[in-house]
Length: 222
Image (cartoon, rainbow, N blue to C red; front, top):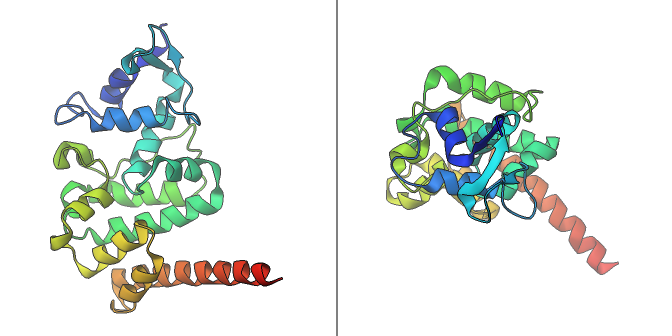
């Protein structure tokens, strides 16, 4: 029991004592990586079925830490698990994270700590072992401490869509699964600077998706 900690206790040690003060959303996010049918983290249910009775090994705190940082970029926990398990998916999300964080557009800039963003991206794009080594935290405060129940940057963008810049709008459509609309809007972005990087990334993803669709259509006709 000495090496076991509850999920709320682990979160406070990882992100600070006030991390759960504004809302309980971060704990619910953490539960998604511990309590579902395909857990990223193994837990021990010491005192019954209540969520707070689940304890995790101290050695697994790093997995939870990295998962919650990546979770701020993507929309679904399943995507985070893919980052841990699939190198190709990890590279895609790293590219997406760079497009989101480097520009610090609209609401995203509020929570970012620029001194750590480069290290976060370097770790995500590199060979850092997400099960054993911690990513740098790119935030001054965890997003849910600033945006209340919205734990992810993408969800904040969706909630404040009237304030979006052109680049943010492209990202929202892409992460919502509408790659065609994202590509359409990306074509209108300037080709230089941060928006140019975003434009190239979206167009590359759209091209790959189109080629995959063409392949599926081919097999349907065979």
